[in-house]
Image (cartoon, rainbow, N blue to C red; front, side, top):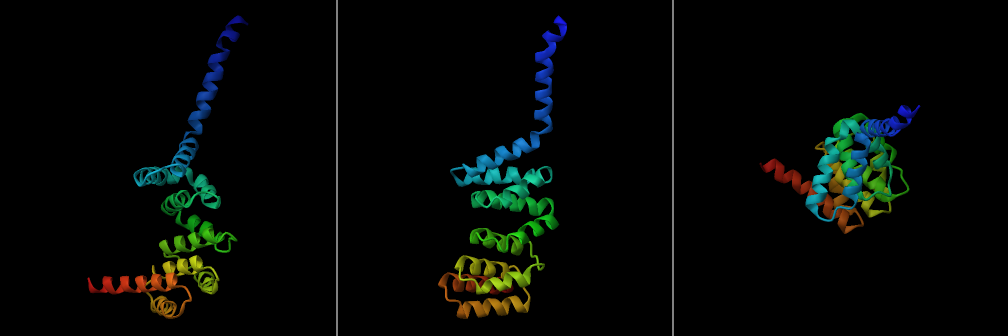
Length: 187
């Protein structure tokens, strides 16, 4: 009996160590997210973003949870989005699609931009409906989305937006996207 009591702290320490080892990826991911959210300079932001992206396959559920948590800082959600795109593009597309109708316009706008980065056409109709949004950030995101496509319909829409959107920010974004195409064609 005395021998069992003497070994109890070792058994407890062993169980704690095993638990930490089994949860290490989740703990490292959460630590990286915390560090990214509190990073002060761009070098730190880039470093922690890269660390999170490298963990992608091992932390997919955490990436989805982070992206879904719209109260997180945009740079944290952006890092989660990039890592999710690298690790599971199909899941990323579905997660971003869920946020298109988010009442938080920042979250909706980010989802539109992320789907553009992926060059996803799956939600194109729903995204184009957002051109009628009263929020210029959402319309700007649609312009960004369209800028990832080289088809004639996207170019025509960008030209129409450039000529007629009520917001100078959105018109300028459309002009930059169209100008970028001209610069690429010259090269």
